Structures are given as C-alpha cells and as structure tokens.
Length: 392
Picture 1 (cartoon, helix red, strand yellow):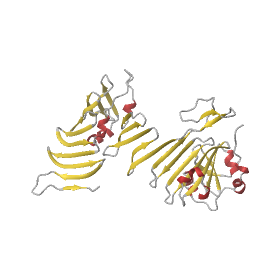
Picture 2: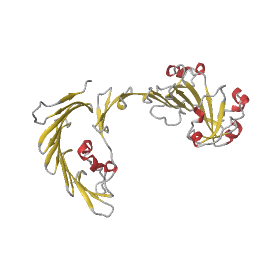
Picture 3: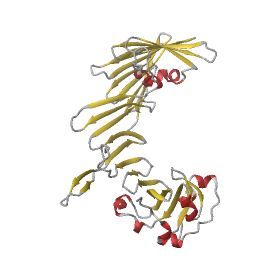
Picture 4: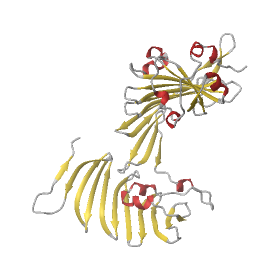
C-alpha cells in the first residue's frame, strides 16, 4: 500500500484551506511572490509542475487534484529541524516547500535566505531520504554540498553509495546508512580554485583570460592523479569515421590570447585534415559563400603542439610553444607576419610577459596566478624606465 499524505487532516490545512488572493503574473511564475514574508504564518497552495514552480494559486483541494501541487510555508526559526540547525542563523527567512505528485509527497525543500536576500542554504529530500543539501556564502557561492541516497530493496541492485542491509538479532534486515558524499569548494575571489571530498581533491587552473584551462584530480588514498585540459570543444567529441578515434585537438593553443579571435570565430564550415593518430593537422575555415576565410595549421611533437599558424588574407600569425620535461608549457612566442610581438615565460604560477614593437622589447609585465603585479617600460629614453608594482 502506497504511503499517502492527506494534508486535509493536518492542523495547517484545517485552518488554511482557502488560498491567499493571488493574481497569476510573470513575477508569480518565477516564485518572487512566494518569497515575501507572510505574517501570520499560513500555508500557501499552488498548482505546480515537476520542477516545483508555482504556476497559479489554488485551494488545497484543487491543487492536490492536479498532477503536481506545491505548498509553501514560512517557518519561524525556532521550528527549523535539528539536522539543519548548524546551517541557520537568527534573522534568516526560512521556507518549507513541499511538492506533491498525484497527491503523494514527492520531496520537501527547505530554503534559508539571509537579511540581504541571498540564499544561504537549500535542502531537498524525498520521503525516503534521497536528495541533497547545499550551503552558500554571503556572495552566493556554493561552499559545501552533500548528496544522499535512500534505502533500497535488497532484491534490487543498489547504487554505489546506497545504504546496505544487514540482519539484526531477530534475523530481520536492518538498513545501514552510508555516509553522504560531501564536497567542499574553495575560491579565489569569484573563481573556483578547488573541490575536495573524502576520496579526491580537485585543483582548477585558469588562463589569463579567466577561462578554465586545466582540472587536476588527486585520489587521496593512492595519490594517483588525473588531468583534464580545457576547453573541451565539439572536436573533442567527434569521431573519425575511418578508425573510430576521437579527434586530438591542440588544446594548448586555446590558452593563447594571441589567437582568441580566430578560435572563437570558426566560420560557417570547417574542413579538417588528420594524421594517422587522429591529430588535427589543419582547419580550413569557410564563410557563408563557401570561400576560404583562413587556415589554421598545427605542428605536433608527439602529443604536444609545437606551433600553431593562422593564415588569412593580410594576416599571418604563428604561436610557438616550449615545454619542460613534465610537459608543462614554459614559453610562448607570438609572431605576426614574421615579426615577434609577444613572449611569455611561465614558471609555476608566475608569467613574465614581454611586448615587442618592430622587434624591440618595449614593455614587460609580471603576472602572478592570473593577476598583474608589476609592469615596466623597457623603452630607451632620456629618462629612467618607469616601473609600477602592485602591492599584494
């Protein structure tokens, strides 16, 4: 027999069967009206959808006869459940939202909103206990999440993190709860720099244009490491019909600001040529009329890219890369029509960028973890070179 929740017999339903007058508007559809504090506390009922959005208000009788119904109640701080008490601060607004499907409780959601209107905590769980919790800081950045699995029938194959069943003293099966998957996050300003669970730790690295370029994962028990280079593009997900292999894309080139306008403007149609390892040798770009707008050529050294050349009418650019023994990029040189314009020397989190004019070095900047900390003019003048350094 299915477990059903007859709200009509609860104290709240007896007192508040009638809906608050509510005119359906665009704002109501986004849930803005239901975020307003209600005093005295009442339970508001809405016809909803499977996402839990309030579509229109209704009597509880009417809402529960629909496919999906939503109840929303503002809760005083004293009635916050004990399991969420550590995530609650006095003065925060608290809402309990319950979503029903065909009259049965589908999930219960708790939302804490601080005095500045920032959502600081969200919990959503099914009656069986499956769901998640998320905690945010004052800027709305996700700091911690926990994922929960519900108990499952012993006759059904259980997911990896599902609870297990063991016999108790009477020989009856007893559910043993498995700890939730908990992930914590760290940031530098608004940029995600790391994530960690009990089993692994991730480090996120960015290019100077604020695009993520590398995710490194270390498994804490074995110290094994994996590495994903970004961005992943449609080329990474395409197949070579000849051998079924993935395209091997020179992702290093995507971190060069010198070619950003070229890489972002792929044209209407692109034709690739590959070598026997599936590596992209050339990308020929065509415009809407089918005319060639330019060709990008990649020069490979084993699995690393040594040079990228862009050739278009009146615009020839070349990027040369150098790597250390660990495969980390340590040098980049940018040429336009055969003349050196820019060089970047990389050492750990520091980059030294030098700009050239007609082959002469004119400006040098030092970047630390994507942030410019020093800039120095290299022009030979009657006055001493001007150097500016930003304090940490």
